[in-house]
Length: 184
Image (cartoon, rainbow, N blue to C red; front, side, top):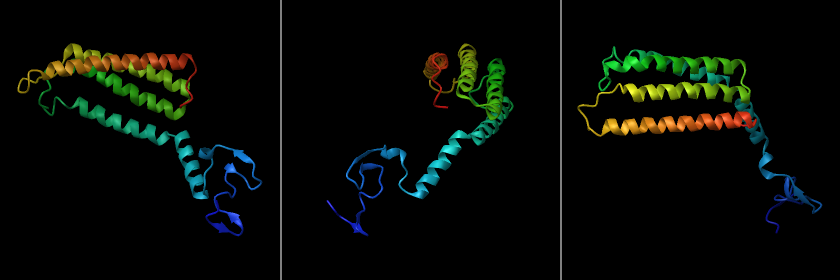
């Protein structure tokens, strides 16, 4: 089927890495690995380079977490409603958790191999599990003016968060031990 011909060559069969080449032989190259235009190739190379060099993402994570550290340490001074005075009982582990994320991102700027990321994520998730457990046990919230079911719902949410965090730790340990860290 010839739809468009330019200079005697069918536009649908010219130098494509899939289908039939000009000699009629079947070409087995994967069509999704081959950019069709030079602009697409430049964009693909730029995206690959950005994926390989995520330093700006680490820097943004450090900045955002430093801001969160400031906000969480001033919540009681700002007299945030629904926050009980025993919030201080869970603030120490929150500070450790955010500080550890900042430190991990600093380390990722220096060295970001897949196995290293999994190792640090296991540690960070362990700290996050401890934070969620501390929130569950101290429950520094006061919802007396709202629905009486809200504390129960939030406690169930914290239990689910602990379960998901524990599962994430197990998956990351498995992937680290099986050397399945290619996605980084």
